[in-house]
Amino acid sequence: MATTRTDRTSAAEDSSLVTTCGRTIAVRYLHFAPAERPIRRVTLDIGQDQGGTPGAWAALTADEARDLASLLLRQARLSEDVLQR
Picture 1 (tube, helix red, strand yellow):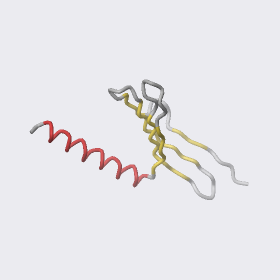
Picture 2 (cartoon, one colour; picture 1 turned 180 degrees about the horizontal axis):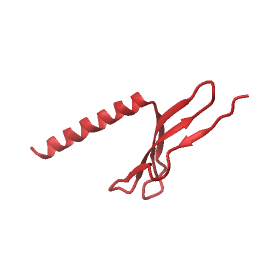
Picture 3 (cartoon, one colour; picture 1 turned 120 degrees about the vertical axis):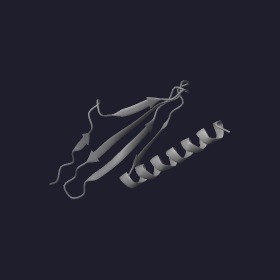
Picture 4 (cartoon, one colour; picture 1 turned 90 degrees about the horizontal axis):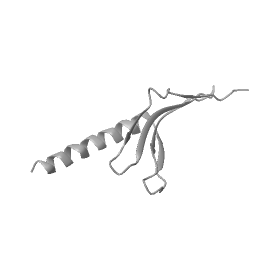
């Protein structure tokens, strides 16, 4: 019988930021290791806002995480370009 193990990076390796509106966004690596099919994901956890409204959570494949990073960088560049006009 295969056992399932969950590995998470240590707290020191986790990365998160707090937005100006008070939400904590945490990005972590999640690894489920069933013998027959390991699952690896990048997790994105958007915490509650200052009023306690729940956030959101997503588990992304490596390719999805790269695509999201690309979209975020593109939008950051666009927002900076608008400010410089």
